[in-house]
Image 1 (cartoon, rainbow, N blue to C red):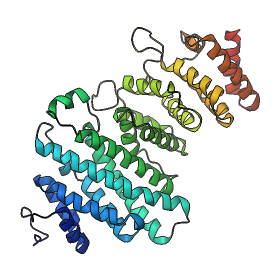
Image 2 (cartoon, rainbow, N blue to C red):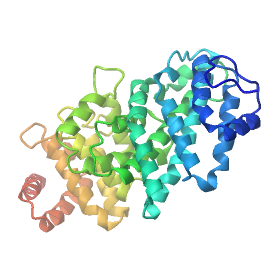
Image 3 (cartoon, rainbow, N blue to C red):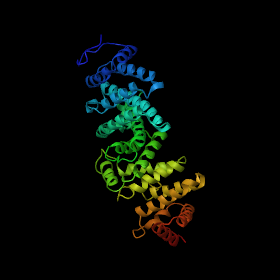
Length: 401
């Protein structure tokens, strides 16, 4: 017998299949069950979630159904509740259980929101689909704000966890960081479809995207590329620069606040990405969009110069290397935009009047890279009716030869 919907401590001992049957008949019970189970740390929480997973699997062919919409809203509302994140002791079994279950829910959300995005992309949305997408989209800011408030759970240190989990082979905190990143990424894709021209920097969605990009799983290349693409798209929306961009940077990046993104970590992440041989064409353009707009904010980048004794190639040299890779092996349609943004960003970071000057900085790369970049810049300048950019190329040419 299932407990009354208002009860708070009596739970039936059911199998996953029995929970699935119960929730299938009474889906309105799901939200209450999950919330109480999380708060009270009940041992059958995994079975409750397993039952929900069975129902989700049954809706694979109809994930744009009313039932699926209601499920998404229920799970998003649950994961937006701060009580779900409270008192998660890493060294306790209940703490690990909550991380594991949270990871499952975030994974469920990502798998159910993705078909909505696909449906919106492939067909003119009908009224029901668009209305449901709007409702889900409106729940996203609260979820992202909650994740931002508890972002420490999205960043993990392998050595610490190796000690704290005492021999566990499964890392639930790592799983939570991965599934949360994927969920936020799919919400970003939904935002592009539903509210592409709105200002998104006040929703805390970009904040989480940036944090996941810097501190999330380093090996998940698809996730990281997706996050950078969404950030670049948001930056390019008219009205999202200037005041919105400056506020966003101040809220997310800090040298003194340990809970935010450190400039060293941001720069290191960009350097590693720019030097990756796979990064060309559209994704490389996205990286340069992000670098170009962030570069407008004074002092946001560190490790710009190369330092062979510590971090190795700096951001400037890495930008030159990425441009050369694009010109050698990328699609020609992306060559000019990437070269132009690279050169403009160099002048943001190191204006000629400021020692060591942009040319000295670029010369830290090989002379072949510098001459290739300047040569391509001449071609771009010839095409562009932009006196400012032509002037920058003139400075480079005069100093190069």
